[in-house]
Each structure stands twice: as C-alpha cells, then as structure tokens.
Image (cartoon, rainbow, N blue to C red; front, side, top):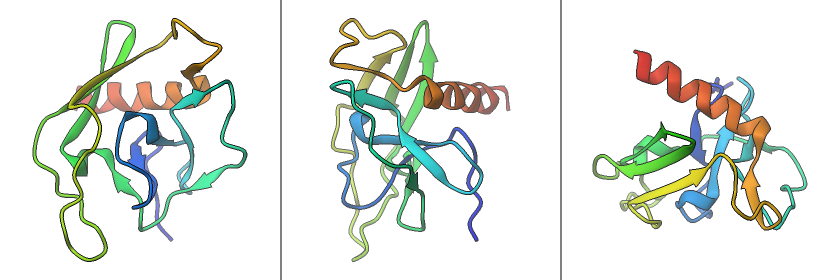
Amino acid sequence: MNTFQVGAPYIINEFDCPDMLRIVVCISASGKCRYLSIRENRRWPYAMQLSERSTPLEDFGMQLTIEGATFCVSKVGESKALYPDGSTRRWQGAIASTLPFFAPEPKYWRLDDQVAKHLAEYIQTKSAQ
C-alpha cells in the first residue's frame, strides 16, 4: 500500500489537465485528496484517492510557494512527468500563477480551506528543510 505525504500537491491522474485549477492536495497518509480550489461554489461530490497514476506537482517542474496571502505556482525546472506510453507530460497551465487565500469573487471560486491548511503546512515544512 502506498503512503502519501499529507499536504503534498498532485495532479490526480493522466486525464486531468496539469494546470493550477486541477491541483489536488493529499489530506491523509492513505492518499485521500481533494481539489485545492472550489469552482462555482461546488465541491467535487466525493472523496478522491491518489494512486500510482497520480503525479507529484514537482514532477512537472513546478513548485508551490506562499507569498504574502497567496499560493504561487511557478516553473523551476523541466518536466519529468510521463504518460503511460513514456512520452513527456508537460505542464499545460501558466508557468507562473497565483491563488489568493481570499478570493475576490468567493461566489464563483475559492480555496478549499480544509485542503489549503494542509498545503500551507507542507510548504512551510518543506521550505524549513
């Protein structure tokens, strides 16, 4: 059985477009996860599970940091992520994006606070190492 690090960001499978809107965050060592952002005031209707098809965000050459009151994702290297056929899976979103802790239009999107706190702790622990 895989053990996952709580707070670590992933793209859950090879079918989700690797971009800022589809980042999931691990919320338990068993691999339970949720999307980081909530769109149109709706949560994903069920808990998701990370698996061997899940790709850590850093494998795309991307890094999440905290700057002020925002999560920032930026390109720090080349993608090492692969599709099942062995071809390179590239990041498809902007090479630098931000998600503010408090959305200017919370009716349309916001961070999932249950997930964001795990991600913030993960980032702080990683930066302290």
